[in-house]
Image 1 (tube, rainbow, N blue to C red):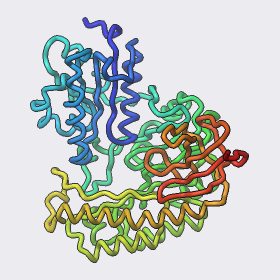
Image 2 (image 1 turned 90 degrees about the horizontal axis):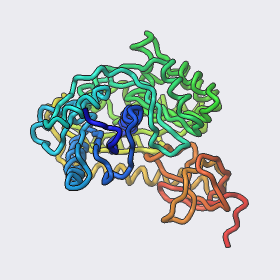
Image 3 (image 1 turned 90 degrees about the vertical axis):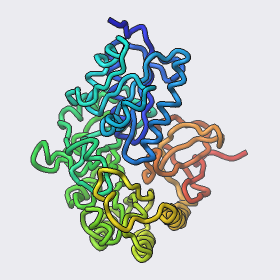
Image 4 (image 1 turned 180 degrees about the vertical axis):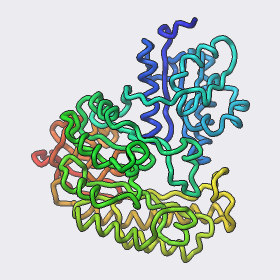
Length: 445
């Protein structure tokens, strides 16, 4: 038997915030076994790389990361473990080729972590993908700053968008039990901002309780004394109903912000994507949200260059972006993924056209974002301090319309500021992404 308590473990997590939560739960398993954790990969005897495989670029990054860190085997590193989406979907192709990795585990195999590692120390590479139970685990070692955390309320997806591999990787939509999620949230300690994530948070509860339960879990989460506010990401447009809109509007602990991945605006493309609704329904939803919650910040993501997307279709998307004037947007070039229906579609758009269209969309959104942010100049905003930006020599934080990592920031001067606390910041300047200001009583010298 290997004495794992004598070894140091490191974890590197790639990809989305949902992947991060998975990695945090694996860290908890490691810690619960009495093992030491390190955030310095060069000091680890066992290094875990938790991978993303959503797009070809993500798979490339995962493989390159494994190869990059495999050189540490010339030093302290004894075992390299690859977990997550890449082995879950592509173990057959990658396990024989990626010999630098000693252990492969899928997205539901973390309960087999030490068993697989023990076997690997016996002298053979092991592929344990598909061996685990996938049971829900609420304990975590949080890797975000202390004042905010993600709560993953479900896994998998039932939407079957024609460009997306998630159902093939993560399986069907599975909601986690509400009582377990509430217990997990309580265990996070004092959190200024709890961010709800899933592939589709609005579908929460349908599979488990026979009806949508997002509003109910929001009510319950916001009664917890350790949770100061809750932010919603990844709300599918066809599932946003009056009850949810009313809860966001009326519950003071819910951030007036919503992320709705629309992906396109033109009916023909949306139909080929197998996306719900169409252009006019999206416009109506955005109007409804703004009518009911005038201060609501809306974020979305869009794909450019989907197969058959003509110049007319693209101009329609550009005009849609100009019309709805969302607060924040992410744009991605269509990625032709094997084992998806979109892979087989005719009239694939050339790569250079896809990239140029993404560039154009960002230029359009930059102008909109600049104007929106400029409207705050001369006003005072409530800003959550995220810490210090040493390059800019000032504090860094976020207003309610800015989610961590994906949106901009507020850079501000103050005599002192504490991470996780809120400050009244007078906005003095802006660019297309960020705001700049000072705490009201701060005087530049």
